[in-house]
Length: 144
Image 1 (cartoon, rainbow, N blue to C red):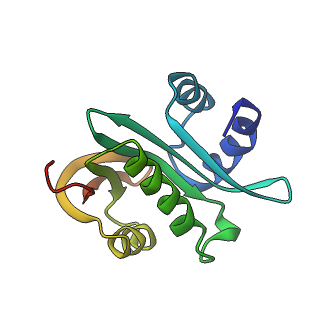
Image 2 (spheres, helix red, strand yellow; image 1 turned 135 degrees about the vertical axis):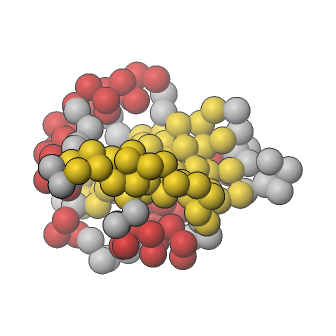
């Protein structure tokens, strides 16, 4: 991912989430040196992800697949890329939050070995009120 991708990513973000990240969030992540990746086909970004790495903990901050591209394994492919990067950087664990109602994402994360370790009450806001986030963890190193 680079700054030229942010406009297209923001369009996908706006179509995918009720409370999308603003363009500045992506720009800031790039400037801070976070692991920012895209999957692109024929010049169109199909999926993107952002992950931070601090104190041997990788935190998946955003992972999104374009609506019309879901169900083709792109989320799995992109998440595997992030996990490989986390291992390369010697992270001991990967952490993420996911909407409690996001069954497709939950299936993917569980399939990839994540387990729920906490609930953040009312973490996500929206027009229908707030929703809990499930905090999920994947241990990469048993010493963490």
